[in-house]
Length: 493
Image (cartoon, rainbow, N blue to C red; front, top):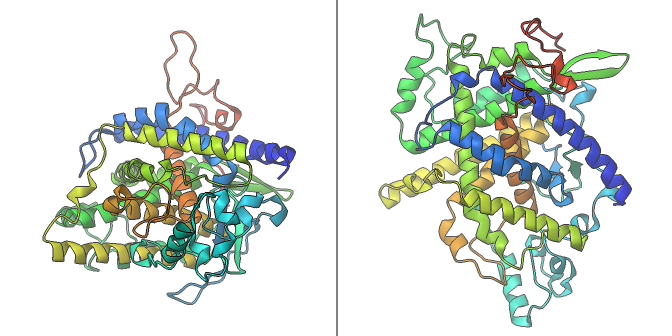
């Protein structure tokens, strides 16, 4: 990739990210007073998460997402839905995902094995005869023959039993590289029965919920007077910790997706040119405490809980990347070194967070029961990852698959503590390994959550209060929302 092209596309992506950041900050401020205090099932408060994300995490994760290693994601958007006959793909042009031309992919990423992340993994010819060699990751170029034989043995290891997600086969002709900066997460006009069916299947069939218990605001629920979802939360609190966590993670994932869609909404199209921006009416419909009868703030709290889980995973997986064997290889030695330095800096910050979720509190009962529950937990989540192949909009499917895979990778990390602690310094481990696809999904999914939580306020003059109504000094995308027209509604697609 030429330096000129890299600067151009990075600039486009960065400009879009700034606009999205400002919009998300504004939307979050509308309900911020309703989302406070300590999160349930952990000892962390929301204010501490906000400050940590703003000052420690967000500035670095944003830069990391712009690095070549993390911006290109290989995905198969043509896998058929395994659960029902597809309703047909979204015909709206903005649902389309533009794959990245082969000529623009860094040579170290596109050449050879899909799971590599070091230069030596691309140049170790002795492994070419192994039919599973595509699984090889970072390999140091100074390996002995004995070590190379160990790699071949390691390559045969099938860690599918550790996966919380259905991974795409990157060798499939249908799998293509996508530049995530040029295909941002946003609302494209895809809605209706197809979109409803996906989320309804996730909640009704995979969240450990009996059909007799109805989710709040479920339009299929019978009239229950003044219940407002209290019976649902009474049921939820009666579940074991593991099943409560599962529901909160899915709800948080849904909230993250909805926040991005509300912030980057297809408002109208004039002369063939789409207009994107924040849709306040849609945001309020999904998150406003009054319009959602208190459900909106709960959804946002679950978003914080999801952030906390993925933050914990990053702190736990740091030893995997701290080994000299891991290079995050793209072919540009200087850039690769900078990328790894930045990533390790993020890991160091995650370790410093004082109120991490304690994953050891999960699956802590008798060994047989805990093992059975963990497997049920894993299979339910894996099923949700398969449902993402039923999304009819390619752009929505792209980000649904990426965020689901990112969370699945985080769960895989959290429940592989012993394997991570026992990693060899200069060779892969049979007990724990990550593909490049998992690494890219994990960091970009966490980056999406970090962006959702980022509470940047507009610049203030002397004596001026930091308020969402002080909009004159905001960047242009948010100046349309003055205190006078805050209740106005953009035209929806």
